[in-house]
Length: 64
Image 1 (cartoon, rainbow, N blue to C red):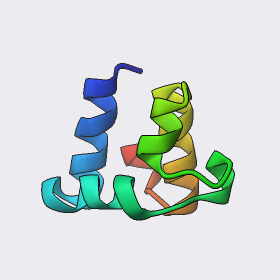
Image 2: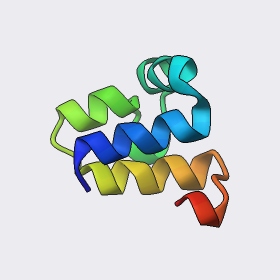
Image 3: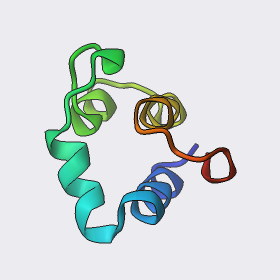
Image 4: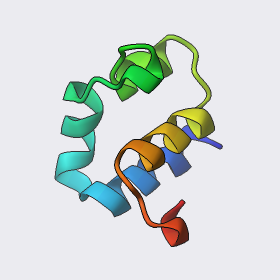
């Protein structure tokens, strides 16, 4: 998954204003105690990060 697609999906689910705030502030144990930004910066694949976000935040299947 390209980062542009990842950020589009984040904006579609959380809204364009909150997506970055969530990605910057919400620490998830499933990402090794990292935020979305930290996981991406650490080399996590965007698709894997998106799957974690979907699981943790109960993103509906049709948006995954």
